[in-house]
Length: 227
Image (cartoon, rainbow, N blue to C red; front, side, top):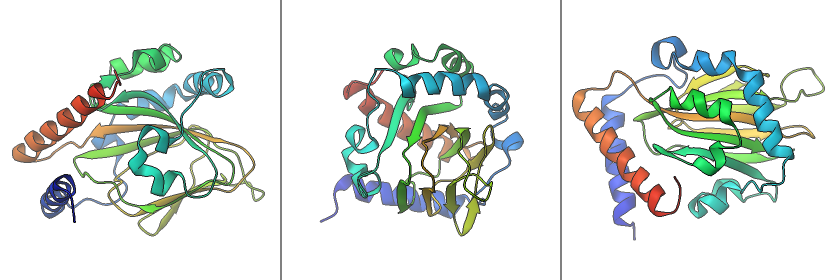
């Protein structure tokens, strides 16, 4: 039997889907102009991310942080590791201390709800899935994007029937409620900065609902020890 949470999530999803009709990829300058600030500094952010990857502190697998995500994280014995910096408005100070430059950028960008450094192991596959909530958008900035034998980026984002290959310092603003999956077709780790950001231009009632949902998730994150 479906849980009350699942039923509520589906109801919220239907409400947003009926009112918001935008394509899978959105215009960065219109919907998240602060993304340019992160892209302009991608090499500095990459340096901090590489230090984390090569450092002594453990980087948990996604399903170790969120067991409910095991069906997309723990499927093939290969790692998808996440270094959380902000979780729905809750800053994780102990992690942010390892990347002070990136943390300063985040502090200056209030539209960023969550921020994560994503480390995708060689030959890792993230199965097809959809995000639950259309009130946010996903910003992706690739920091370490190894190349395949044909010279193209080896990591592939399949999004709503279209293939996206982002190189070093390349970015994409997309709606993760569309079906998507990811492959890393090489022998090296792909590193990306993932930000969840407020969707602009929503009607007032959806903005209020979005605020309530994200605050609620943020409270759960704090209760679980984040922030």
